[in-house]
Amino acid sequence: MVKVLELIFNEAKVMDQPLIEQSTEYSRSSGRGLLCCRLGLFFCLLCTAVYIPLFYTISLKEVKNFQWHLNASRNVAVYVQPENVTAIIANPGLCGNSSDDHPFLLVIICSSVGNFEARNAIRQTWIQYQNRTSPYEIRTGFLLGQTLNNSRQNEVLAESEMYSDIIQENFYDTYLNLTLKSVMLLKWVSTYCSQVTFVLKTDDDMFVNLPALVEHLAQPDVRSRNDLIIGSLFCRAAPIKDQNSKWYSPQFMFSGKEYPDYVSGTGYIMSGQLVPKLFENAMQVPLFHLEDIFITGLVARQSNVTPENFHLFSYLKQPLNSTCVYRKIFTSHGLRPFEMKSVWTKVNDPLENCTSVKLPKIGDPKLKKCKRPAKKVVNRFTSRRKGSRG
Image (cartoon, rainbow, N blue to C red; front, side, top):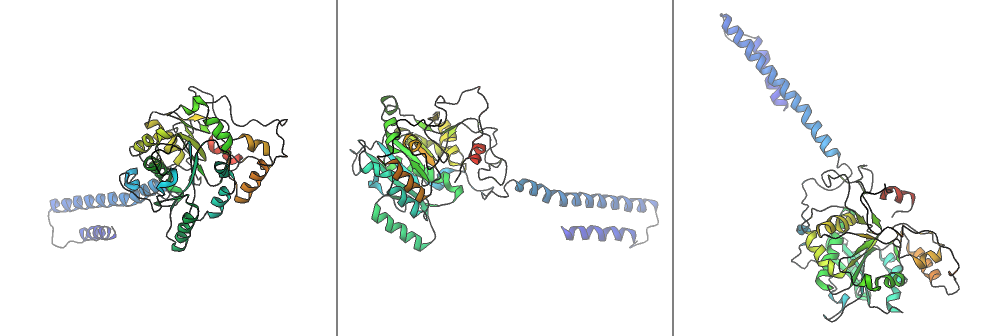
């Protein structure tokens, strides 16, 4: 660009210095015309030189704090490879060793490689219910991505050998890959556990009240459903355009004014028969980085399934001293390992009597599906800032 501008300046100077004798008026006017043309070209190039960097600054400013390359593929199948076995630790026997095994509930807990303490806290607390008094068969697994740290990977292999509850897939465990983790969940269930009645997707900082949840799912009108996605429902949530937000949504990733209705990714139930359909349709929807919106909103819509609300699913952190609340709710979010153990101890304390305790209102018991038209609802992200968010 600089060389072009220098060339134009030099040629402009030359036009003022007669290289040969030009005696006619025609020659002078012709030279002046050529000079004007070249000066015009100079100004055009100058404007272009200023405009192009400005244009790209504006276009790329939108992804300043969003580490997803504009040209990266959003074809989910490229990353998930639906026809191939991609798991590092497949653990095919987790759901049963024969086609005759039909677990009632499969709990998949999304975790990170380094979160061994969180996984162990869950093993020592709320998943104990599956081994003790549950009248229904419950299976539990932890879903991890991969790590480049060989020492950490060896620890994961040893943990898997000890507890036989690890599923590890071939993707890097980052926040922007949470959608891939959830799609890998769908892939694993479709491959190894398609006969399950219900699947609970949750995270390793969640307290789950399995007895209360199983009691609800076992009701005949619920158990007979094969199209169920149920959790803490969000209606007409608008994309967040604040680049500093954890839930920032660039225009190129989602251009609509409202997300499809969806349930919180902190904990939701899917009908087992629905999972293969969701997995198949996930290959048809452009990848979106917010996993709950992608799976239970965009992919559910593609599958003609409407997510539903149940008020005892909570994406907030319930007060740790509210033992009777923890005995009633299905989920509570954002518990650290020592808090998980403390709550579990209190919940199972036989001296704690909740029969006369008036519980606070949890969620909206009347809300089942989003209504249209409906009153304005509290934005998901505003309410989370008021509560607790991991």
